[in-house]
Image 1 (cartoon, rainbow, N blue to C red):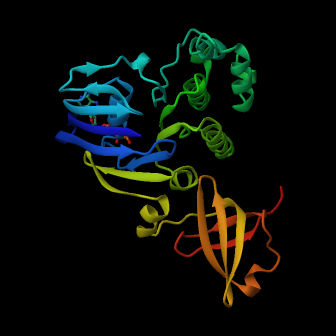
Image 2 (cartoon, rainbow, N blue to C red):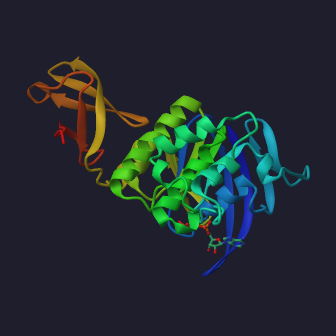
Image 3 (tube, helix red, strand yellow):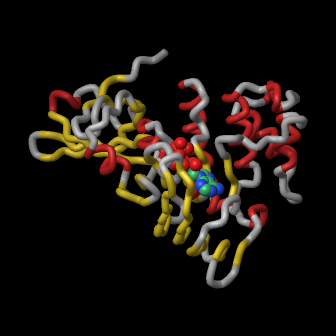
Length: 292
Ligand SMILES: Nc1ncnc2c1ncn2[C@@H]1O[C@H](COP(=O)(O)OP(=O)(O)OP(=O)(O)O)[C@@H](O)[C@H]1O
């Protein structure tokens, strides 16, 4: 659990904005911050990471106080058990990809952990390249890899996949889910991509003008806006007869949704099938996945 009570006066192009966050973020989940540009998402993450000082409040992460105005506590960024991938990447430009990752290794960790990460994130071929030679998307992948090296219990990911092509983006979304499952860490994500948010998040906090204006499960948040969610890949986890129709539960990344289906529509589908979930969350159908 991360307890956040943050007050910070920010200077925006439209004048002063008071960022005011009062939240308890559940442990072990993926929670996403979503909202208009300039709402204060990155500033919130920078305060959790210790890169920006709040004006008032406290930050308590899994029982450890990282910052508390009244108790005069301010733990250094490197002593907070947090990994972060920020939009500016903050890589060492004159070091290679591998050296950037090795720099983050803790004493007890072995170089094999870097090898595994390079392989999983398809960075092997780039490992000896200096990071200032890389494209924006490649830098973004290195920055994400570096955040994961120490297997931190809390990860702050500020639009970690925004510069990637669709294929790589989907691969790394799956990798983030796998990493989350294996390490049981708490992930805080900033994303503008609704498909990505629905796939990855347990909970969404919508930030507007420095305050949380809405929070809930992704389906609740995006249902209200009737946002198109086209073609998300899922797996059939359950088919339950309910009178004349069926309830089909489908896992999509970190979420499970349940949709009603008529007897004739369910023919040809079985447990474990990988399917595509089409259209709006509020009006969902499924279709066969075409094998490439
Ligand atoms: N150290 C600071 N002191 C004062 N104001 C700041 C500081 N850092 C950022 N700001 C201002 O705070 C506002 C919110 O910025 P922030 O980057 O947190 O928003 P955001 O929601 O992450 O936006 P985006 O989605 O565009 O990244 C901006 O107008 C920014 O100029």
